[in-house]
Length: 196
Image (cartoon, rainbow, N blue to C red):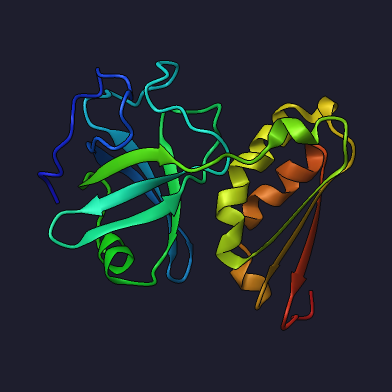
């Protein structure tokens, strides 16, 4: 898909309402009907790492636009300290997200944002923090996890309670061991357990 419009990546984000073209660098199939799309704004050879052109805070979202289909608000699911790509974890649930699922690496879509309030990370300083998520709800909390672990010494005990209907539907399970090693107590719960 081409022709999403927008401005050059050489222009810093001054107006989040202004649309930019973004190319899909990689698609990661997370679960059936759920994928993470790593987006790079057009004009950013290899991304915008260190340029400050697409900064975001944990808890914010972007508007993803597909010409002729529509747009949808999707949480940013990446690390706010790594802005060379802008990951969005998306569950197929409607016209826009079903059409997005048909796109492949190299395809282009429209991107506006970031929008929304961020998680109050500084208010957690010196306190224990418990994060609770179920299913796709872990996606908007993932940036907060990255921030908490990057500043691990500033917080008390860190706990993530994450659930799903079945064990194979837990989101980002390949990251749980690294999160545990970095100081996050990861507790999983499922509605229908298997032998493990």
